[in-house]
Image (cartoon, rainbow, N blue to C red; front, side):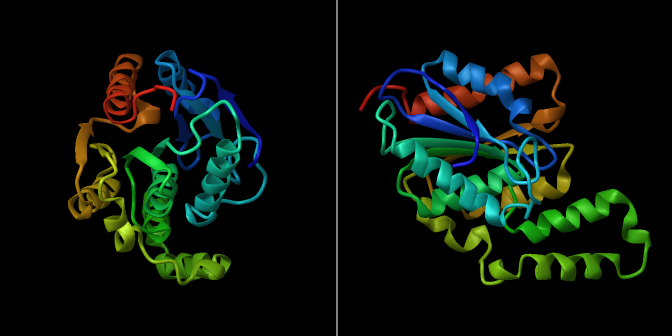
Length: 235
């Protein structure tokens, strides 16, 4: 596991790993961490590659999944947390990594994903479109090709929708943001394909752009989800 911050809660209780989004860093989600810790959860957050204090470049989710897996494995080796029950929260890139890990790791007992997408190439296209560079000829196709070549080792990675059925029985919360319509469409599609139990919540703006009051309400909703589905009790 790369350098991260561990916020202790009740000894032996589950741990929630908080996954920041693209062009963000761990410091941007500290208020959510504090709210979770106040309810006796152990909480961990770290910077994905190419963000905050972590060197390297982002892959918009491909290798970030492996970084999150390493974090969960490192936490499971501690003697002061529940080794078998973890929660995940993530937004956009962090949400993709969280969903991918939840599909493959039986220790994930509940997760919440905001503005999640099913394939990192979807996020690439959204970023190129939002940059205003699509007026240039072939920019979408050329950026897509370059991204595929840079991440060639992940060429056989299926979209998250391919394995979402493996989350059957895991409580899950999907969150959409009105100011991110492209991501909202992806999130709604994944929600529709996800097995029960599942919930969906809608917000006006994405987490990092919320006002203090909106952020407080959002964080209380996230805590309520975890309290209901992954209570902070020692096991």
